[in-house]
Image 1 (spheres, rainbow, N blue to C red):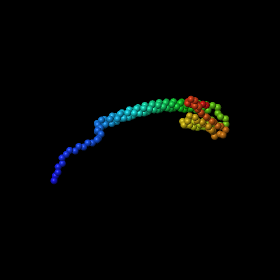
Image 2 (cartoon, helix red, strand yellow):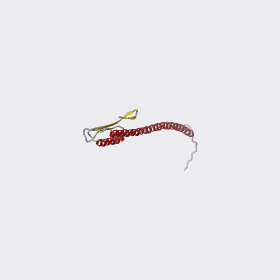
Image 3 (tube, rainbow, N blue to C red):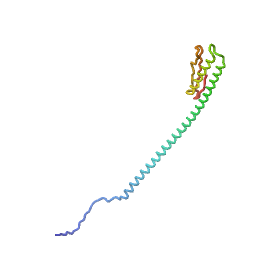
Image 4 (cartoon, helix red, strand yellow):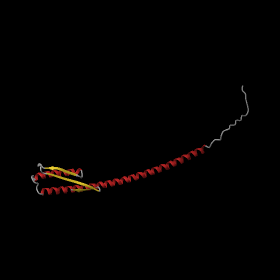
Length: 163
């Protein structure tokens, strides 16, 4: 059994018209490119600022390093000059002492060995500091005592030997 129906059916739907997806995708891509370009400009600006700051710091550090090297060289030259002057002064003291009038009540050789010990101590201590003090250098005799004091005064960062 079969039945046949014939007729016509009409269906109407109220629906909003479909958006143009190509246009929507194009708008999203345009927004993305705008944001991406802004971020790229901001990043380049940040990088440029950081690079300039670092270059300034490097230049400043290089200048400080060169100044410090120059100061170290000046101090070394001053130290060498002071050591030479100290050696000269010690030699002069030694010559004056050895060729000067003898001390009363003691032998010249006893004083020579004492002076030699004091001068040797003075030279070794001048290596570790610019100011050295030699004291209590005495011979075996309790009546004779020799004191040699070498000092240095700093004026405007430069040492000047004092007697």
